[in-house]
Image 1 (cartoon, rainbow, N blue to C red):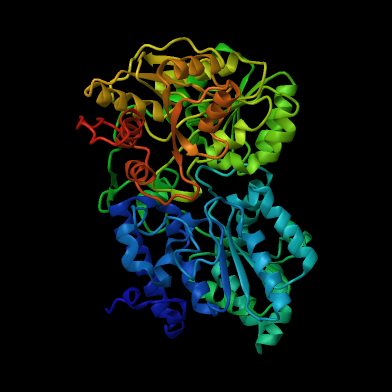
Image 2 (cartoon, one colour):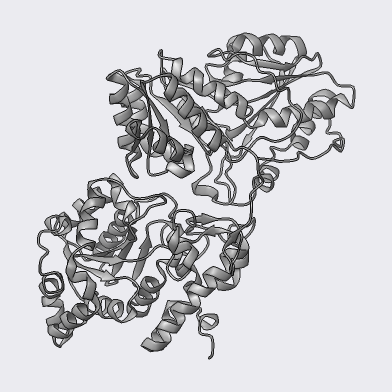
Length: 639
C-alpha cells in the first residue's frame, strides 16, 4: 500500500483523500510518532492521543485561511507532521532542529506559540475578534486539553467569548490527564459526562444524530445543537459550558474518524461559540503508553518493540533530592505542607503525596491560585512550600508582589528548572527568576551549588519565618568537578568562600559555582591565585565578603545563569558603586534574547557561560588578552 504521509506538504493535501485514506493517514502518523520519538525522546503519549482529531480537523476545515490555535505543543506533534515538517523530526528538540512546542518563527502554520498550558482559548478569541474587525470570514478553532481548563485564563476566555458571541470553536481534547491525573471540581464534572451509560454505544448514536439532522447543511447548522447535545446525550442537561453560553456537542469518540469528520463538517457551519467535547486516550495505539500514560508523557529514547526506555545519566537529581528532603522536613515539622500546580512528578512530590497525603495539595494548572492560597496558609499559621518550575512561577507574579511580599508572609518557593533546561527550550528556561524575585521587597532568594546544599537550604527555609524565601535549582544532577564536599552552615545572606586567592575573585551562584571552580583550577595551572566565592544568596547578597575580596584582588568575574538585567551581577555592581569601589569586573550572564532548545552543554557554549568563557574573562582582566584555556578533564556528569 502506498504511504500517504510522505506526500503531505500541508493541510490542503488532506482534502484530496477519502475517508479510508484518512484512516490510513492517521495510522501512518501514529507509526511515525513511535518511530521518531523512540529515536529522539520527547512528549509521547499526549501526541498519540491527538492523531485522529488532528487529521479530521485538517481534512474538514480550510486551513489556511481557517485558523487552528493549539493549547500546548506537547499535543501538537501530529500538527507538525501534517504541516510539512515530517522530514525534520529526526532533529526534534535537538540543537538546531525543530522545537518540541509551537513557535511562530518555525512555521507559518504555527499561528500562536504554545508552551504554557491554558492559552489557546484566549488567543483564539483574539484571532476571532481580529477577523471580525477586519471583515474576513475564516473560522477559528482552539484545541485545549482538559487539564488546561483548570487554568484560570481558560475560564476567563470562555467567559469573554460567551459575552462577545463571536464565531469560535473550542475543541476539548479530554484524555483525563495532564501529566499526572487531573484534579478538582472540573475534572469531576467531565468524569460524570464521560461515565454516562449512553456513551457505551456512542458511535451509533452519534451517527444517528447526524443522519437525523437531514439536509441541507443550513438545516443542520440550525439544529445540531439540540440534535447532538440532547439526542446523543438525552440524560444530560445543563453542562457548565452551555451555562457559559456555548453550544455543547459531545462527548464524542476522539478516535472514530467517521464520527469526527461528520461532527466537524456540520459544526463548522454553526454560528457563535461552539464547544466540542472529544474523548481521547492518552498513549492511544502503543500498549506501553496506554497502560502507563503518565510514565510515557515525556520520554527518553526507547526501543519501540519492547518499550525499553533509555536510562538517564544515573545518580541523584535535584528534583528527587527535593522530594526526599521534603518528606524529612515535613516529618520534623508538622506545620509543613506541600503545594504543586499539576506537577507532582516534575517537582519530585509524588512520593510525598503518597506518604503524607493529608499535607499534599495539587491545585491543578493554577499557579496564581497556588501562590495566593499559600499566602493564606502562611497567614493562617502553616508553613507552605510551593514547588513550581521557575518558568511557571512567572504566571503568578502579581500574587508574589501583592499577596506574598507586600504582606511579608513566609511562603517558601522551591523552583525547579532554574537556568537553562535543555530540550524543552525557550518556553521552559528559567532565565528570569533572579530578576523578577530579586526586585521584590522582603523576598529572600538563594541557589545551591550542589544537591547537599539544596537539602541544607530546604531545612533553612522551613525554619525561616522572617520573610518569604525562594530557592532556585537546575534540572539534572551534580557535575563531578571536585568541589569541596564540606559545606559551611547556611546563614541567610552569607556567602561561602570555597577558595582563597590574591589575584582575582570568581563569584558564582547556584549552577555557576561549579563553572567558576573549574576555571580557578585552570588558572592555577598558570600560577594565578583565584579566590572562589559561592554566593549562595542573590538577595540579600553578602556585601561584606564581596567587598572585602573586591578590595583584596581588585578584579572580579561574576557568573550567573540568569539574564543580565536585574540579575545577581547587577546587584553586585550596585553594591560596589555604593561603596565607591571600582574594581575591574566582568559579568557573564544570559543574553537579552530568548534562547533556543538543545542540550544544556550546547546552550551554555552558545551563550558564553562555559569554563573556557570564565577563563577568557579572567585572562582579559589579568593579562589584557584572552589566553588559550588549559585542557582539563571534562566533568563526569554535567547536570
